[in-house]
Length: 96
Length: 96
DNA sequence: CTTATATTTAGATATTTGTCTAAATATATG
DNA sequence: CATATATTTAGACAAATATCTAAATATAAG
Image 1 (cartoon, each protein chain N blue to C red):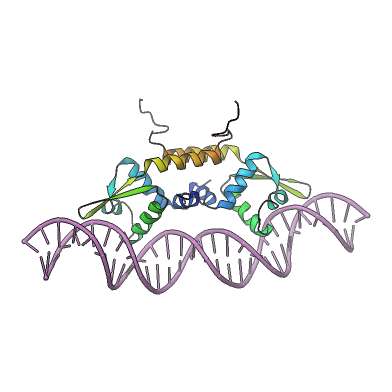
Image 2: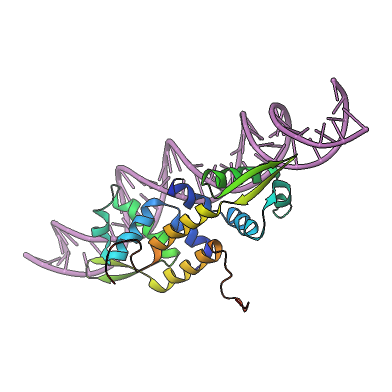
């Protein structure tokens, strides 16, 4: 995972909505497609970017492909975010 | 502040580096410019995007313009990020 | 094997983005 | 006022991005 891939992935509102939806439950590409007003080809492009950032994983299930959050990478990403935002230092040996 | 403006602002590595630098201390445009290998005009463009997202504020000081983090918006942004990433619900009336 | 369904890939296109150079604006000072 | 310094604005341009249509691939089922 490159940090930059994660930030770029998160910059698009459709992709953030996909992540939010997957936070509720893992879903097939088709089920996700029903929630967004664009072609399946366009959605597939967004899926690729999310996979590239390793924010989601896929698993084939017959004709379907099931997308799910990659929880551990989501947690890494959260840590990166907090590093940028928090006033406190994270993961240093500094005494409080 | 539109949420989208914040995400877009954060998508660029130069802008994230600017924020990190401002986390250390408020600085003039010129002082920031010395840290980045691009023209002042390009930097100014990045400053505008950060201002638009309300992540930074400016204050004129003689010939200089001092940039500083807008801490409260940074905190709002952090909350938005956590809403996307955390498995737990934030700010709901759900019982734990 | 043929047909149907699910999804992705390829290629085209309009829009957005990051950068540059040159010019403009704002302030300070002789 | 004239000149120097600091910063922004305007305009151009190449690269990246989001979307579409059409075609390709993968699996299931008759």
